[in-house]
Image (cartoon, rainbow, N blue to C red; front, side):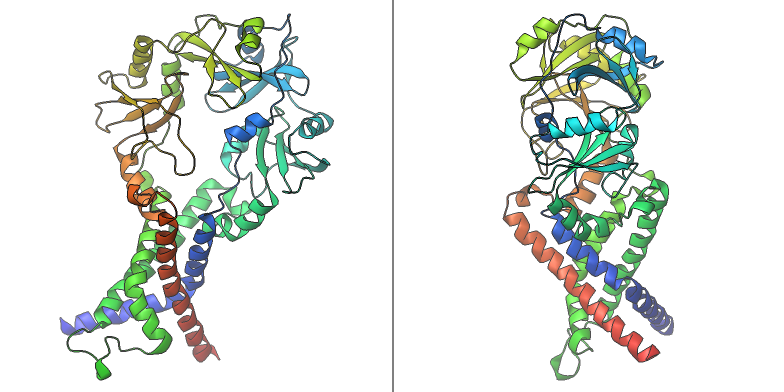
Length: 481
């Protein structure tokens, strides 16, 4: 048994050595890029930025209503929502299906609008608050910053540079005229050092979601094997009693000693980050989707029955900075919302906030065969409803189901919008990923405490990676000259 143990450790050492040589640089890059991501996130269009770029909504008599616009769209499934906004100086309806597909209808005459020409899009870009000297950079289907599949319903894009000091670029949908994304020069630069290498987010690879997921799972899985084998070997070579010669606890010297002893501390960071990152890719689909599927959403919205309220004059009187009108349904009841400046959406045009009883019935339809949910009102952020970077909307309603998965649904009580789904597996994922990968814990949430702890944690892992890289490089030089 003793000889068997020695042979196993020998094979473990060989596996750790050569896999470590193959992955040491990747480890170092992961820790450096993770430090960048503490301060620069991947480009995205926030709701505040989106609204700031919207022109005031100009309404006039003679516009068709949302029901007529939906009929003109010729969609077979009920819409998730209908937005009335501006396309340049023309009011249009943008109808979003439950699967994310979008259709645009002119509010003046009900014609279906399939494409927005480049001249029109440049005029829209010129109206952006940051616009100085607008430059057309051409039409693109996808690039590094729009590679995610959530942009698919809006492709292709017209890329426009605004000529401002920040080097802002807009991605305007050639299908709907909407601004899908904005990026700045600083975001683009730092993300090449941050999210792109950290997520292995190269456009040709990320454009194939299934392939990209498999690559990340396999690469991070191999990295877990390297970190775990290093921990086992490090413990096996550590001597506290009796010690090695000269009272040393390690048989190694120099960089190798740093790698050994540092690895016993930094290896914990290594394993924590890599295992939690691997879990973020949802291996074996252990974690459920974070939104109900389209069929469940259709049951929640209810049948197309009641007429949607539309009163242009009433909508205009709602607020002086009206940007959009949104038409939704909660249960069987239509709801019209005014989007005003930076304020939260508010009911208008004779509609009111969702009736609690109707909302409860609609929620019960989400999961047929299960008992109606218990409704809780969340007034302050908790461990599961919070914003790591920006404040989540409050208050919210939490529908707690008694199904086997212990499902929670979060709903905006003003608009009836479903904000997210979370079952037992998602709550476990919240701790395994957010808790371990980003140290998103209540005791560390206040800055700069979080920054200091995260920097220390990343430095410990980086030490292991760099010392391993040096050792690997020296071994390759000796072996191959």
